[in-house]
Image (cartoon, rainbow, N blue to C red; front, side):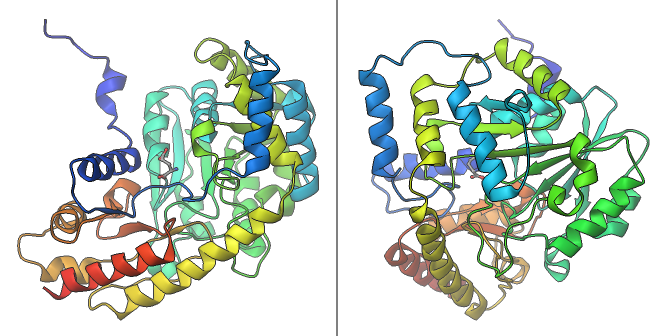
Length: 395
Ligand code: GLU
């Protein structure tokens, strides 16, 4: 039977970040020597005290359905985390726990967007934002930025992009894939533009807040523009800060009406996030935080090494990331030089075949000609990867 898929299924592509990771894993399984610099997840293990809490939850029989929006004690831990770390105040009724931050964003898009609505997404963007907007029937409106503006949008660009149909602006700082972090001044000037357009909501994806080494402390737009509180949703999760990607716990906080609608959507799809993972997430937020800063320091050392190596390579230009575990070099010079390589997608293929390195091409993030290099790998692996890259480019 020729199955006719829905328009929405046809409108999207599989997550390219997950696809590269899966491809690298399959090649490794088949015996190829592949270095994976594609994965967007910490290479560290989940800390022991978090694992122990989850094991205890299983032994205690905490294995049944929970409240759809998350257990009260985890929501309380999230409320306290916002207070303590972000100086943001929420009631538990303004918080929804979901199966990863991606799911939080998905629920938000479903609860907010209608066909005909526009969602402004600065590029380079995290690969899944536009498709989640499309799945809600709305239209992603991309603002392009490059190395020369440190991958950050200007107030003027934002002003030009906003129309009467704009429903949402997506901010992700520190950014996946560029590692760019908006300063308080930059957020204040974007906030100034947003004040003139009260019909626009803001989604602030703060997933990488703890992996930041620029010297500035992390800033959310609400810290500088508290008057935007009624129209801002803050999204976060435990995946990156606590190396808990597989546990799938993310959360959103914002206006109660919207959070309630997101919860209703979740109640008709996944129901609650995994009970055991919720206990683990509570321990992550309430337990010892010292590992978070230690791991950030490790990421910084790896970043400095990779950044230095990349810039030594002919045809590669990279600016330092301010945080995350990604760097996003411009590879136009290399692509122009290589025979049979015409774009970043072919270049990713070339690297996989000729150097055994997996990276996600910049096109996946709305920035052709770039590559996302994930340095969530040991220093030894990164040294080997940079040596291979250097030789592949010299060949
Ligand atoms: N956020 C990670 C990445 O960008 C995980 C994979 C995904 O869901 O995209 O690689």
